[in-house]
Image 1 (cartoon, rainbow, N blue to C red):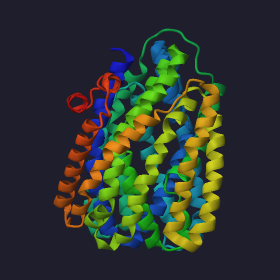
Image 2 (tube, helix red, strand yellow):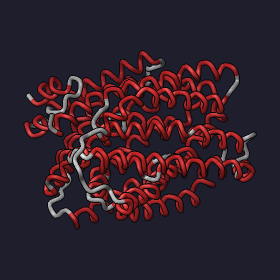
Image 3 (cartoon, rainbow, N blue to C red):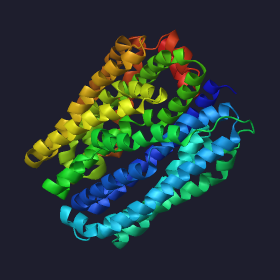
Length: 500
């Protein structure tokens, strides 16, 4: 089985698993928000943001190193070097996690003073201790992604979410509150890790050929910048503003911003976040064989992203606000308009994704670090200037600014290394033009008052967008030839309908 076929099969399992996790994730989100209320959900938002920083700090970029180096070792059938790489990554995780746990315990009084929530210092220390289960599942997931072994991984993700929901249903009615959500999440991650544990050995037993090992210096140079990049990524692309909202404003405003950010991101990144690790691994392997293939790979990645992202963006603008009140009750209504705006804002981020991936493949992570540092500094500066005075609106402006500027920076940098780089602007514009017919269903949204109506209007918008893709001839033989080789569910049949 060649690399394209492996990636295609892996994508099929990955997207199938993602669909299930998406549904379960939406269900768990509804349970959590409705059970906690606006104040406690705001507190949970702060805990989750802190854990994002901790996970990235502990992982040290080593999981990304697996995606970069393990496919090459598998290609060389260098089993001993592959096992050595995995052991080093695991040791780094454990050592740094122990250090962070100790620091979190000592810093409880400081954390409690920063955020005026009852028992918050102990809550954060407990959550950081339990994050080891998330780190374990993340490491095993990346290991299986690097070998395109996503079948069992998809099942593990479903079990993770299912156990999480069961934990929520058991603990939240008994008054466990935010801590109950943390325990339920840890239980799900543990079950997910145990599910895929049996596939670790086959993933690294790739042969007995001798090959130069990945030198510690090379591994560190590639992986360590990911720590800083990852931390800055939380500042630039994730809801790090929740920390400042919680400090300067109220827990309720923090919750409004978080749910708007989280819902739009969950929906819009549904497929892109599923296929990115697989595309990264596949492009890295292709680049190892033929360096001139990178420009074409970037073009294909752009087309794949916006074929998917443009319709989701339009549907989010049409339905996002109504989804907030239908799913989370009218108490979260202040998050409705921010949700719709975030669908527009986050779509712009996909202009930077293929260019950022190219720098990783070329092992120019230090360039990504410089770009993220500039964007992160701008983001934090604007946050400090605007959030204390304008609250949620002041938190949204910096997000929109840095996401809008980032593709311009990446385009300038990548063009110096890849002279033939191009962004398929006409194709992307065509995707949005065809998707815009989904706005025709907008007048019906005001009549929606429940989940069934929301699903019905969403289905109608989908049908209109498919017709729009067909009428505007978005998909040509070039796109069918590439996208059709990836066996996503119903992809081939849908592509044939749209392209004829």
